Amino acid sequence: MKRQAIVLKGVSKETLVSNLLKRFEGQETYAIYDSCKMTPAAGIGRFELLAAWDPIDLICLSPKSVNAFEIIKAFRDKHRDWVFCLLSYDLKNQVEKLPQRSDQEFPDLVIFVPKYVVSLVSGGEPVLHSSSDDAFEVMKSLKKAESAFIDSDLPRLNFIAGFSDQAYLAKVEEIKDQIREGNVYEMNLCRDYYCENVVGLDAKSLFSQLVKQNPSPFTACFVHKDYHLISSSPERFLMKEGERLISQPMKGTIKREAMENDDKVQVDKLRTSEKDLAENIMIVDLVRNDLSRSCKAGTVKVEELTGIYTYPFVHQMISTVSGEIKEGVDPVDALRNCFPMGSMTGTPKIAAMKLIERFEVKSRGWYSGTTGYFMPNGDFDFNVNIRSFFYDRSQKQLFLWAGGAITIDSEDKQEFDEINLKAGALLKLFKD
Image (cartoon, rainbow, N blue to C red; front, side, top):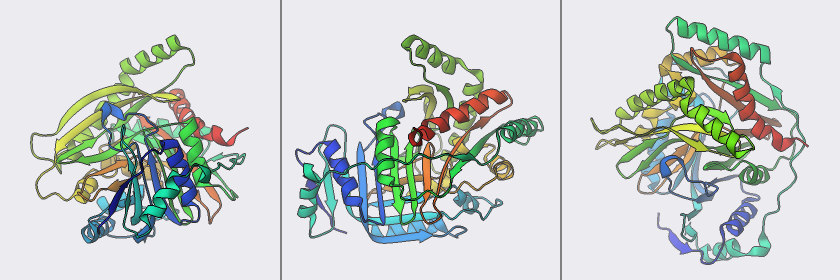
């Protein structure tokens, strides 16, 4: 497909985002990714802002679909263009033979080619990539200050945990028993929080509030009809840049403190925590193994081990693993070979995923899945859908999840405090 590339000269990012959100009104399907001017781990980034809307072609697969990765591959082969998509965690059942619940309404896959794409790299000017004859009219609308999007107020909501505090603490002990028996070394246990009878929630306003109050380098809003993802994810799942594949698993979390000296103490605690170091290193080994399926022998390496990165409410431990992709490996196969991300499962991965189905009370759906994009040249970038809201407009239900890795050294109260810390940063948006 031939696209015009039009530079949007003289428009600020703030005006651009506001006008994009305004333009999304009435659109059934759109996606916007915002780095919030935060440099991702190890300084590896591509776009400061990327947005897409008005699908030319689109596929939406219902839960319990089949052959999703082959469908993605065929879709890319057909278009060789900008492709935006969201993959459910439950596609793990197409990667491995695993048990599957049937309690999710969210699609397994949404993938589309947009009529319009806007990209912005750090230090540059926005570019409109358009396949439409009205490209110059669209350009003008994206530069108008008077057409700005106005946030609507978020409702006051009370969320209910999917299982009780006591049940969570009991599950931690049961998982530690599984570790003692040698069934797993580490497992990510997550708890859902939900609110029913949520009417009129505006995904664009929630996205705007997340950008302001909990900025993260992989903030995203992906909407398809009644299904909405609004995410302030700090974690990259997998990126392809030329011949290089890059994964950045995040394990290890500690809260921020208000006073600078106290906050530095927290960083030191995380940096030297044996439990968090063990968590991170175990997943790094898993990621190295996953990448080796797509990369040339001897090229997989750890570029940064257990780096500490700071976000508005937490400090995170993140490692960077990369490798050189083998000749003939399709970008979609590279994505599949690492799916789902080890940081949200555990190790060994298959055993951990089986236990997740046993200990968590709901299927995850879009949570700990991924959203991102393919460029026309086959490069891609995908996040991890954590620190996110999931809104089913037709069912009037709003969800979020929080979790953490359980190891033999896990202390029940610390694990409980960690999930409350992660969930609390999001829940406060709906409180007085």
